[in-house]
Length: 232
Image 1 (cartoon, rainbow, N blue to C red):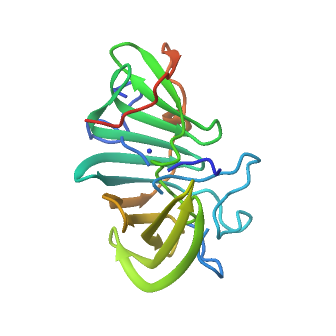
Image 2: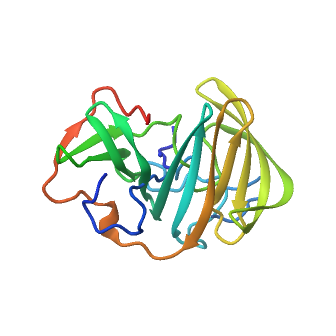
């Protein structure tokens, strides 16, 4: 199973003036593209994207404004990405088993998601949720086929639109996927079979400081028992 992804308070100097974080390309391949709801990296450190050659395409760094929709409910966040690490600063805090968190850090290298609990000064650690990862590169878990639909636009950038069919853990699903032509980053992903989608409203290539993705000083780590709920 590929490790993901792509899905808090003012511990670090904030990269933007937004209240809090929500996080969440590569070149086309002959069959399609090799990933969001999130980045996919193999356990041996090999990229699991079905398309690109990492020797040619370096890890991308960017920031952006993202909207994720689950069963009609929208979640807004600022996203900061650096290689296999993501930082999500949610507009509204999300609920976890330990309380509310406004900042989520996704560490694909550790197969972990961290929720920063500002009031408790705790770092809630959970495993990656394969059903709710924010893809960065085109290849999706359980991907079976990919068809190029044509040229399109997302976040004001030129993209290629693909129809992707997956069979992940017995769940068959169809997606529309918009992949940035310059970077190979997935800028928009829509499920045709359930109420789930994400889309960047703003996307900007820019270097990101390493400390955005590290443990904040003075925080105590706690391992999750139930996993994140992702609710407002």
